Image (cartoon, rainbow over all chains, first blue to last red; front, side):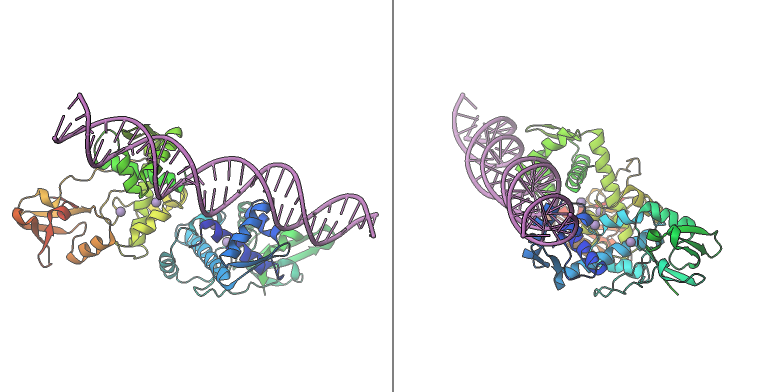
Length: 219
Length: 219
DNA sequence: TGCTACACTTTGACTAATCAAAAATAATAC
DNA sequence: GTATTATTTTTGATTAGTCAAAGTGTAGCA
Ligand SMILES: [Mn+2]
Ligand SMILES: [Mn+2]
Ligand SMILES: [Mn+2]
Ligand SMILES: [Mn+2]
């Protein structure tokens, strides 16, 4: 029923509402995240409210209704299952799958998606370590801990990569920064805004604080 | 570059031009085949001509240019490879794949398609026996011979099913009328407009003339 | 040769999605 | 507590794709 455009809006709003834990998602974030002008976002919010997918309070922001949340969650599931398929089955690189999935997610039916899920063995994460929601919209929460929130000398398991840009993903792959790998924090140079890392069987390397926060880990 | 709508138009026009071997494809056929009103088809033809995908002569019809033909052929390839994937890999029934492929064909990139082609082992037909064009747009011609064009008593190989409707495909499957199976023409009752068939290891059954022409065969 | 169907084209209207630019409001600084 | 800045909303316009209904052209028949 919802158009591809509406699916994108609802998915983005859901992701924003899960990230920045505030009551409403502000207009500006929505416009930025969808790459449209603020006016476009405002007018779309009115349509989405009319369809009961969210409630919109002028100059405050937007909150998804259960039906809006459901559609958003379905889109996340489609996106991540498709990304998994593209890497696991077709052998594409994890840096090139996001844009492909961004389009395919609007074209795949529930029936085909469920077959794909079975074919893939009901995976629980996509190639970037992001959890895949169940058919019923249940999603595992990501750990909060980033590379920055750990002590020098501890060995951690990489859980998830938050940055989706091809450039960063290529870099991360080259350094061994991939979900499942073990990594040790060798040094933390507060003054230099830098940490030094060692991924198992790989040479050491450095990462800025800002970038380090994009790698989620568990011990 | 072309929108999904344009892709559908060019694919349909190409298929029509291959079926009814006439110089130009008439407007009426285009409108019918796309399920739009004649006026819509006319105005779209002007746009497509502007983009140099075809030449349009008012009240005569339309002929694809090489670049239009190329896009149409790419769409046929995408559609048929996707149908093959849906049946071979995901196990959907051959009666339910057409509509799925009709949507997915606009969402899959060349890169993913080529991976899919390799994954499937470069198939030469889709599940209905239709030839899959090569990457360069070369397509095998279908045999002209239908079930009607054969003599009583001869055994033939089923090559292709031209009717795409789920109802007919379900019926055909139940009777064993599928590409690759051998069939014998048992009787031809001209006055009753009917032929009687026997597919190997299956009970005999009858088919009207009109329907019989939708099954292509070779000896 | 004129008439009648049918095929096709034109016209005017509509919807979804978008932008640019102007207007309004809220937040922050001083 | 005003002035400046940032955010959001309005307004007016555009584009792609569509339909309904009215208008036009033509092929074949009378
Ligand atoms: Mn998308
Ligand atoms: Mn992802
Ligand atoms: Mn299509
Ligand atoms: Mn087919």
